Image: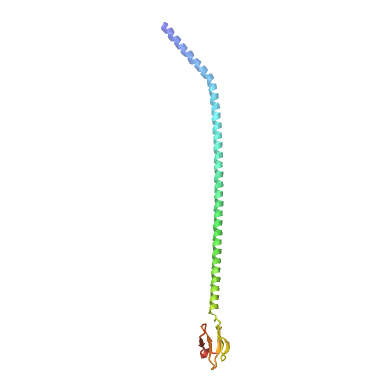
Length: 167
């Protein structure tokens, strides 16, 4: 019987301990659930803040990307304009050089024509020769005492005209 009483007493104490733990846990459970609710609320706030922050960062990055794109487009337009200006400048320089070349060619042709003109020969006229005038090349034509027509070269040599060329 002692054993039986001891077993009943142990069983009662176990039940009492279990009951008291249940009451305590039940009372604490409300407190725990309030803490859990508060933690859940904090987590929701943190998650919401993180989500808003992430959205703000995303919007900021999107704005930066848009600005870079606009800047790149502006740079591209500038480069295109510079390239166009260089091309126009190059064409103008080319036209200018062409014009200079043409002018030089004309000047050279004029100089050549001037050189072809007959140079004035320093010749001392003798008493028996007459000046008849100039021919189409600009040379002074003389007539000798016997009727021959001639002109002097740059070196002073007499060149007689043929019958068909006489004046």
